[in-house]
Length: 162
Image (cartoon, rainbow, N blue to C red; front, side):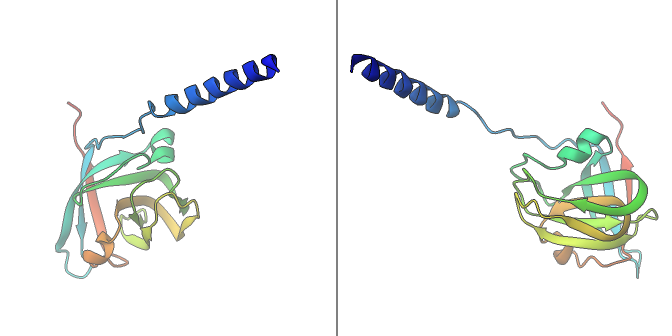
């Protein structure tokens, strides 16, 4: 009986200790790091729709992590994914805490499709449905607010590192 009680006490201490340690774990927060500037233009008039500060995802690691672990993003910020070739793209919202609009662009920097209001943590595929070379992620609702359309275009440039 004493040994059963001792084992039960040890188990309770372990469970309690494990539970307490979880509260010490802080969620990861990745800060925005301006790496470039992007301008969106209307295809019909060449007028400026908006200008954004962007992070550029052009390495395997950057592409795989994207905007994961962000708690927020300003409306004048976005992430531009740059791929070496044109092909259909598939994105998902794993570990992404903020709702997003995904704007797919071709090799001529023209919008070819959208995925609007992608929901946080949803792992369903968000396909471009047509070949794309670039993907711009912005806060959900901005594509509609800015009245973005197929064939609107973008220009971007990288900012020099300090």
